[in-house]
Length: 314
Ligand code: MTE
Image (cartoon, rainbow, N blue to C red; front, top):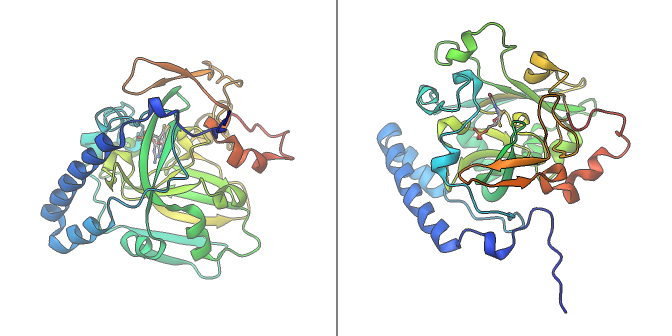
């Protein structure tokens, strides 16, 4: 008997969204995005975006569950800059995301700033199906469009002293009401080791569901590190810095006993206030068991060899 060994993140056929359904949705959504872009930015920007989305699917990344419909994932977001409720969509739409410049600095050959559209022209785009597991024990599965973070690392040309990559979200109290709340350690900062950043799973995201990112998902560019709790995947990035010391992250600044630097998904290590053993899948009434490294252990477990003394899962 031929047994196909399924990798951690692969989907049993019967759970997959039929491709035809997904593709027709994609063309509908793509069309809507194109029209919206045309009215907002004029014809040429819309044409440029139409050419980029939907990007070719990288078939190496499949799922163990159906893709979460946008009506669920797009109306249940964590984006504290725009408030602590899950309905941040209307507030997030105040953020102007085009044009958008991202700065690459720190321990690199030569710091530079680049417009996100120019960056994407250099790196190209691909689509990947990824799971996303929030530390609050809900999850979703989505089709991100973006490029491997390793491509940005290569463009940045870090020097040998660079040990970590630090990600920083925009700071603008005038448009982000959450940033007027002084007890949060703004701006939102996250970090990865260089080895994590160069792992092929670490993905810079510019689109979802075959179209440019809607604002509430972290437009125009965010991180997706699917083997870690969702708070590591910082949104609306303005700066990527290569540094020697471990960055102090937003959530560590708020509550380091509950939210550490590593934050790898592990069902066996509970949050101090709740279990991480299972997760509620957005848009369903299902709870499913959570997998170590969110099912991506085959690709990332080796990153942590020799680091067993660290708080890898909190
Ligand atoms: N990035 C910024 N800048 N601000 C945030 O509040 N929330 C994080 C992460 N990135 C957050 C952020 C958390 S807790 C999660 S679970 C994910 O974004 C949510 O991503 P989603 O809205 O695409 O589901």
